[in-house]
Each structure stands twice: as C-alpha cells, then as structure tokens.
Length: 443
Image 1 (tube, rainbow, N blue to C red):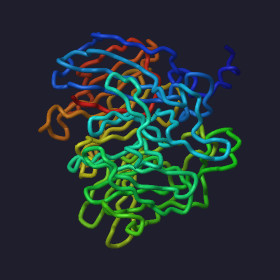
Image 2 (tube, rainbow, N blue to C red):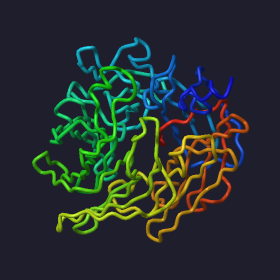
Image 3 (cartoon, rainbow, N blue to C red):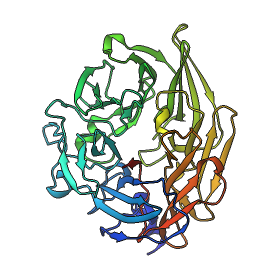
Image 4 (cartoon, rainbow, N blue to C red):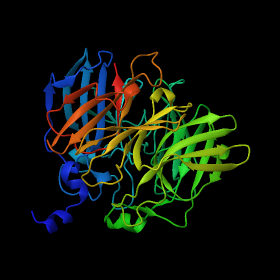
C-alpha cells in the first residue's frame, strides 16, 4: 500500500482503530504477576467495530464487547462479541427517509453498564440493548414501554439511593428529556427539559441533590443528516454555552441555567456539593470539530464552580496535559472525590505512546503510569479492594495495546502505588481495537 493510499483510509479503519472480524473465546488466560483474589467479576469494555465497510465516522461503527472474567486469582475467560442489534443483523436504520426515528435500532457501541441485575450495551441515539454476562445479546429494552426517547451512554448511578439517572436527546423537539430508574430498575420519572436547540449532549453529572446538564454548542445539521454524508453535528459560534442545575425530582421549571464561556465537554470526571457551590470537574475542549468531525483538538482537566447564591460560574484549568476518558471511583459519584484517572494524549489519534494519569484533587498532584514505548492505554476503571476499602484502596483495570506485538493485555494497577509496575498483566488471545467505555461488573 502506498503512502497516498494509506492517507485516504480514515484513521478509524487503520492500525488499532481497525476492526477485527472474529469473535474469540479463550479460557485460563496466561498472565504475569498475581491477580488479586478479591477481584471476582467481569471487566467489560465497548467500542465501535464496523462489520462491513466504512461507517462514515469513528462514532458510528457496530458495537463490540470485549470481556475478561476474573475469579480466584485467575483470568477465567476472555470473550469478544458483536452486540447483535437490529442494525447489525437486519440492516435496519435508526432514521427512515421521512425522518421517523426507531429507537429499537442501535449500534450499541459506546458503553456497557449494569443496573438492577441487568447488563445494558449503550449508544446515545437509541434504547439500551440487554446483554447476558456471557456477552450474548437479548435485545432492546424500553423499560416496559415507559421509555419513549433514547438513553444516554453515560447514565449516573447514585451510590447511596441506587437510582440510575439518565437522559435522551433528539434532533426534533422536545430536544432533551431527563429520566430516572429506581433501584429495582423501574422507570419512575421522565421530564422534558426545555433547551433552545438540538445540541449533542453526550454526558452530564449528578450530585447528592442535583442533576447538572451541559447545553453546549455542538449543534445538529439537518442538511448534512439528510445527505447521509458525514457526522451530522458541528460547532456553532452562535449557539452559546450554559450549565443547567436541577434538584433531584424536579422538572424543567426547576432548572437554573448559568452561562459559561463557549466550549465542549464529552465527559465530566465527577461533581459534588460544597455548601452553596456545585463543583464539576470535566475534560474541557475550547472548541471541537471546527476542521470537520474527524478533527479532535486536545481537552484539559477543568473545574467549574457553580455558585448557586451568586448565580455565577467560576472556571479553572487544573492541568496542562491533554486528557480524555476521565473516571472516578464509582462509589464517589455525586460526592466529593479526591482521586480521578484519565488517559493522557488520547485526543491525538496518531500511533504514539500514551499514559494513564492519576489525579489527587486535594494536593493537585498528578502521577502518570508509563506503560512503555508504543503501548497505548484505554480508559482506566477503579475497582475497590473490598466493600470497606478507601477511595485509594483498590485497583485500576484497563486494556493496553502494544504496537510492537500488535496485541493487547488486561493490565491491573495498584491504585495506591500508581507508577509502580502492574500487579498483573493478563495476555489476551487477540488485540482489542481502540474503543470507548466499560465497567467492572462485580459478582
């Protein structure tokens, strides 16, 4: 292949972005080090893996899950499976020629979460797709007919109440709808939230008593969508940017909106309440996709301080290293956190070494783990060492791709000794393409 031919292939079909075409099952995986025996459950990660042809954008490929089961100090099995959605199996389309949306059609390629004994593969355009713990597909879920919108790929589980907060956004009114599942998995609240236009709301945040929406200037382009050429969202210099704060159990009339400087955020790290302030830590882009939907400028860790008494928002950059995929101990979601994790340089999609950083938001320190030349980590997921373990007592699990071997490993780091060599490295039977989000599903 010539250099010209290579550059004509989009980045999401080259190197470790390129899809794999086989579904593997392997047992008793080899590993180095010692797998902590308290890790009993599934490490699962989702990502786009187009089965045929060019999907047109990295975000649009068919979903594929990659999972490892850990138990008794062993890596019991590895499986990778396509999420067998109607889009994959039937060739069904989310939007028909008349603009009608079928939320049962999904690529289900963005996240995999557990709630109330069920596993859901998620993409923000559609209903969740129910999966088994062996990564077989059950099918779309609308919570007994109660869910009439899509479901974000980033629901937020309140660690105290057990409720799952989420939302759906649309390119037609109503543009934004908030939803809440109770701890048993029943949809108990749906509220239309008034926003002025069809923006891409990828994620949001919760605190102990509030929900925080991000209404930011990545706006739906109907003409591009109708032409089916390229990703149908783009940066707008005219839309503006604001944060909406709503009390739990509230509705659109209860939302207080706060204007902020134009920017975009795919992912917050976490949010918490501090007296009359709400603190939100995010991976913030100054702008996004000015040069087209395949151009990703760097994002940096920022802190928004929403002063509810003064009606103003303060903003502070916390680190000068470009990051993405920020994560926090899930037991701290909506509560004050000290530690967080993120991938450094993931915004630069070229083949280069990357690191994982651990932030101490109390001291301001950031400790990087270097996986070695040519090794590229994905999102890190914190897993506590036990039910009573502290925020720094546990492990960080992630997939790491090694360009020299063209192979991937499941790496287990000691969170308290983050820069130290891995506790264990589980060698996988095939590479795991770069993807998006996952979680630890404990037994």
